[in-house]
Amino acid sequence: MYQSIITEVDESIGILTLNKADRHNAFDELLISEITTGLLELEADPRVRVVVLSSTGKSFCAGADLNWMKRTAGFTSQENLRDARGFARLLSTLNELGKPTIARVQGPAYGGGLGLIAACDIAVATYDALFALTEVKLGLLPAVISPYLLAAIGERYCRRYMLSAERFSAAEAYRIGLLHEIVPSEDQLDEAIGEIIDSLLKNGPGAQAESKALIRMIAGQPIDESTVEETAQRITRARSSPEGKEGLAAFLEKRKPNWIR
Ligand code: COA
Image 1 (cartoon, rainbow, N blue to C red):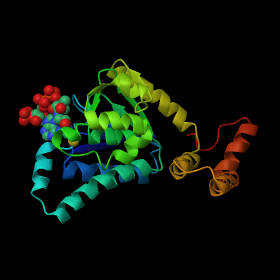
Image 2: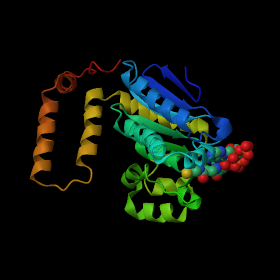
Image 3: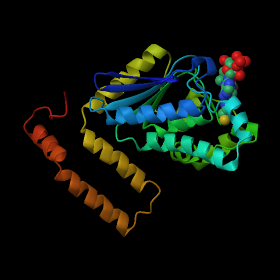
Image 4: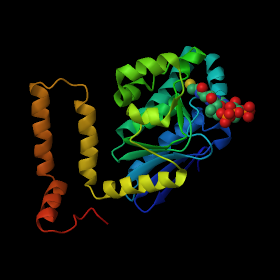
């Protein structure tokens, strides 16, 4: 049983909910380790095709729990490193999940909360969600989340928002690429996410996992001989895979592929 999160499975959808509303879902050791374990649980669950990351309460996630941060200042550097590695592992687990992931953002997200959003494949938020990389205000830096943020919003906007710690709106987050969609209310959030899930569930689960791995492999690489060869190898493998054969056969036979339940 978890104390800080809830996991549930609704047909093919695995939902992991941060459930520390009274602390605005701020991260401490327990929340970090429970999210990591919860993600791995949903990844391993054969019923689950899509993972939705959501939160209870007013805020999506207020970043690091500042009381916990204060405690870590008294730790030895070894203890501090172990702690930081826990958060780094959470984000890499989320980033590398084979199943498609969707961040359902219903309110403010600060610091590490932005890291969670950036490490998901798809992010949808309500208009009133607010964002900020507040670390430098506290004399800290957004180190562990930086690879995911850079990939999501690029170097230019990282420079502005990591240095200024300004708050920015959902509209701005949408404009700079952190969010894929913004909607007026929480009801519409569920509707918008439901439509995305409908599309996701029509597609080959193996092909989706391979596409995620492909993006991670190719992102930032020069288009040289080895990249060109690697992409050719990957489509060759997919064409002769059982899923690839089934997908093509289903299209040509005008029927649903067998992964659609
Ligand atoms: N760590 C620890 N406690 C936090 C927290 C955090 N990151 N964010 C909020 N809280 C606590 C507040 O200290 C307060 O505790 P109290 O009731 O014991 O006084 C409680 O949550 C409510 O916060 P409050 O600021 O009164 O609520 P709000 O609705 O006006 O604002 C936030 C919510 C999240 C916008 C605001 O609290 C905030 O900016 N938090 C800091 C975010 C941040 O900089 N995170 C660090 C990233 S590295």
